Length: 501
Image (tube, rainbow, N blue to C red; front, side, top):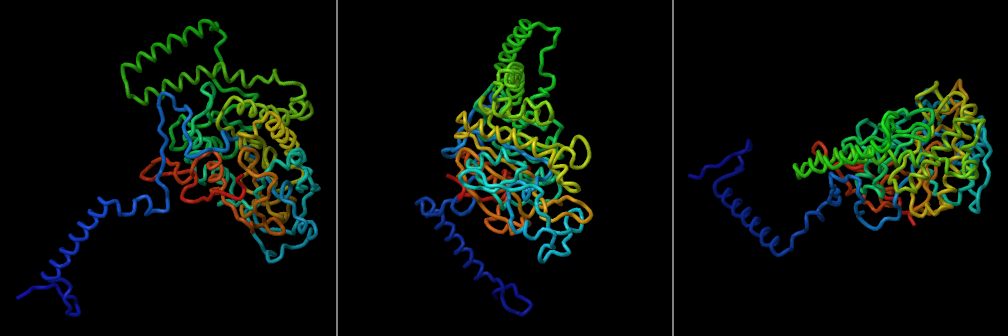
């Protein structure tokens, strides 16, 4: 009698006849799959997934910053990022809203009881700064940043950027790394990991902190995260050189050179004894770069060769505003680093290291006009001159300039204050230079600048586009970490093809 397994309804679920029939069919399917595979008739594995196969750069540990091939033909060779810490208000700088002017003092329609990051919101409040048309495009830009306005026809404006957080530290992390948490690689680290550098005498990636100190997220903004440490940003500025780099005064220059030469011979001999030791090769490479930087960094940081006309154009000779003059020198340093072939330069404007709320950054909560009257002149002339100088020298043809901040500001004033609260729902960033359309406007916020409404853009989209302009596929550039193929854009992001030339 045939035995079978019965369900609770008495129906046979499995018996010997069914078992043998199913086994035969299964073996036949395996055989058919093998025949189809041999004939090349099966779909390729990479075609079964919508995500392209990850690409991990092949890196020589002895030369971690050597130039590497792009995924496809690039439009930009290097990147200069200007980051305004504190949440620079888009409705007081680059996002002109006539309706906000007309409805000044009224409640925002449908948001009369709105509560945001720091509490209840008051009335709609127009900008204290006039907006005027600039360039042949007639782009409306605030008097607060008039020098940047003079370059309006060279800029691609992204007016519907959004963020995932309304808090400064996580917001800076998100804008710099694509993640709100600490410990993820910065965009500059990803780029130098992928492409190396055109110079071997300077760091591939330089972060230039504001003269007043570091941003709130501090070194996370230029850290390597889980990427090799060789790809972290080296931070220094025009007035504060790299620590412990200068030759001690007690050691004569010829002795210093001779010492480096004998050390190099010893290191080479030691490396020959342990071929294939990548950690040893990487350590020696880092020491050699440090030695080269003893000469190259003081040279590139020495602005004495700059003409008086150039210093004046940037505002580096402004004796009445020392912070502006120092930031101007940082802008000149940025240009000089780009000229030398540094792959990624990250220039910061605004700091959380000194003073109270808003005194050294763009965090305009309580008394926006008083604070922005300080910050605007520090940014406007030097940054505008930097764009102009890059263009005059032909560097914009191969350099992508990105201006950004962690989020924007509300079109309302906070109740009980004369400043604007944090607003991650819609704000402005812009690009200029290699590969982007200019003048061009992409996306928009609503009539008041509160929420992104047209062509809503994420930070992931911004970085997908940045990588694309550098000749990199953001879905393929990856690093295997803790069981996951990680990438700058996480599992998101689309190239903003509308802004690409």
